[in-house]
Length: 376
Image (cartoon, rainbow, N blue to C red; front, side, top):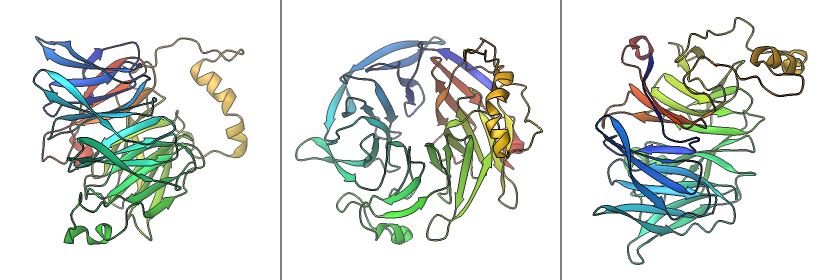
C-alpha cells in the first residue's frame, strides 16, 4: 500500500475536488481563488482560475454527473460554476449568512447541496429556475458552534453534521417540490425539513470530518481528542463505539468499504481502521511509512494525560521553548492532511484509490489494489 503519485501544486492547499472523469482537479491554494488543472503529457497544466470570492475558499465540491462546481468561502458567499464553452460561469447562491461558510457537499442526486457555516447554521441549497439562482433553506437553532463538516446519506434526505460544540447530528432535509417521497425511505421522507433525527454527544472536544458508509448503515466522525467514533443503526437506539489512539487528532475520514475507514489529520499519515466479524472497530496500521502502532495502552489515566506534554516533547522533539525541531515524519505529507476524497468508478461501492491534500501544498494519490485483506 503506497502512494502512486505525488504532486506539489502550491505552498498550501485548503481543499480540493476532482472532475467526474478524474482528468481535472480543482483546488484552493489557500487564497480567494480556485485553480483548475488538467493532466497533459504526464504533467498537470493549469487551465482555469475561478475568481469571484473575496476571501479564502474553504470548500469545493465537483458534482459527478452534472459537472457543476460549488465553492464556499469565508466571505459568506457561495457560487455554483457551470462550464459554458471554454469558460466557467458562476451563479450566485443566496446563503443569508452573517459568518463564514466553511464546507459544502452535493447531495447524491445533485438536486441540492449543503453548506456548513460559522453562523451555527446549515444551508440546504436548491435551484430556482424562474430566477436563475440558487436559494437556501436554513437549519437554525440546532448547533451551538461552527459547523465543520457535512455528509449526505445515500437516500438524499438525511444529512450528518459535525460542530465545534463537540456533537454530531443527523437532520432531515426533505424539501417539498425538490425531493420526491420514496417508499424505500418513507421514514426519512415523512419527516419535516430541519427535524433533528439524532444528536451524538460522544466527543468532549471539537468534532471534524464525518462520513456515511456506502450502505448508509454506519456513521463515522472524528474529534480533536484523538478519537474516532462509529455509530451503527442510526435512529432512536443507535449503537456507538469509539477508538482512541496516541497519535495526533484526525481531520477527515473516508469509507473505502463497509468495514474499512481511512482517517487523515495532524499526524500527516493516513491511518486505517477496520471492523472485525463482530463489528468491533480498531486501528489497523498506517499508510505510507514503516511506523507501527504503539504497544502502550490506548486509554491513559489522568496522570498520563497530564504527562502528555513531556511525552510529546520526547516523541516529536519539542524544545524547552516550545519550538519543534525539523524532522522527517517518514510519510509523504509534511503537514496536516485536511482533505481525503475517493477516486472510484461509477457504480462501484469499494474505493481502491483515493487522494489526500494538505497544508504542505501536496496532492497525493494512494492505491489499495494489492491490499485484498482490507476488503475481506
